[in-house]
Length: 371
Image (cartoon, rainbow, N blue to C red; front, side, top):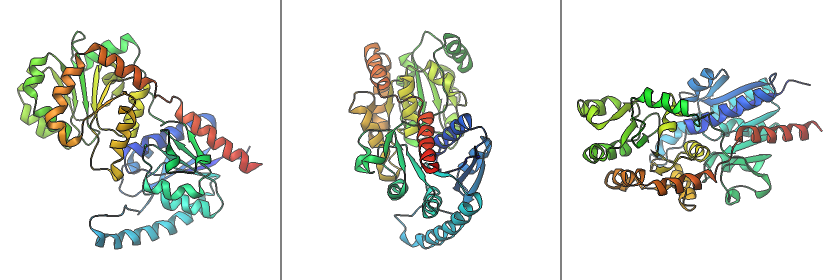
C-alpha cells in the first residue's frame, strides 16, 4: 500500500494545536508508515509545540484580520497573498492524499490550495460556535468533525460527524496516583481541594478573583492548587509572600502534571476553552466556567452555555467574577450533593476516542478517493 501523505493545518492557540497533535498521533498509530506535515502560522505557538511532539512543520506568514484597527489590514492582506502562494507550493511539493484543518489562520490558505488541486479536505471544529476559517472552508470539505450537537446552523448537515474533541491522554482513577498527587502538591487528603486554572498564559480576572477573597479562602479550610499563568506568577507570588503557608495553597506558574491536579480536585475553576471542557466531560469534573470575553464571536460563553443548559456546569460571567466567583466556589465545594450532580451530568456529555473516530473519517475519505 502506498505511503499515506497527510497535511494537518491550523493553530494559534493550544485549543487548536493539542487536538491537531492528537489526530496526528492517532494517524501514526493506525498507519505507522504515513508521512505527516503540519502547516502553521509563523511566530505562533504551534511552531514550537509541533516539533516538540516529533512532527515537521512549515510556517506561513498569515495573520488574523484586525477588526478594530482596519488600516492594519493592508499588511494582513499582503501576508495572506504571500501565504496563498506558499500554500500552493507546499501542496505541489508534498502532494498530500488529504488535508486536515483544525481552525486558526493557517488552515485557510493550505486547505483552499488543497481543494483547488482536487485533494479532499476534512475539518475539525472544537467549539460550539464555528470559527470564521472553518465556516469559509466548509463548502469544499468532504467531512466536518464536530464536538457539539446542532452544528448544522454553521455547516451542511450531510457533512457533519459528531466525534468530540481529541484531547491528551489522562488517567486519574487510581488511588495510588491520588496519594502521589497530594504528596506532589503538599496538600492534605482530608481537605476539599479547589483547582484554579486560567490557561498556560493565565487569566487576569480569575487571578484577581482569588486575590480579592484570600481571607474567605483562609477561613474556609479549603486548599488551593492555583495555576496563575506565566504572565502573572511573579507578581502574585510577591503579593502573597508569607501568606502562602497560611492559605494552604500550591501556587504554580504552570501545571505540567494535569493528571495529578485533576485527580485531587473536588471542583475546578476554569476558562471555557473547548479542549478544557472536553477534558472535564471525560473525567466527570465539577466545574465553574468563567468564559474569556477576549475571544472571537464570544465562543467561550457559547461553549459554557451548552453545559449550563444541561445542568452540567456553573457559569459566572467575567464581569461578575471578582465579586461572585470565589464565594460561589467555596459554597459548592462543600456541597457533596451538588458536586455529585454536576459530576454525573457532565459525564453524560463525554465523547471518548475522538481522535480514533476522526481517523475513521479520514480512512473513509481516502478509501473513497482510491475507489
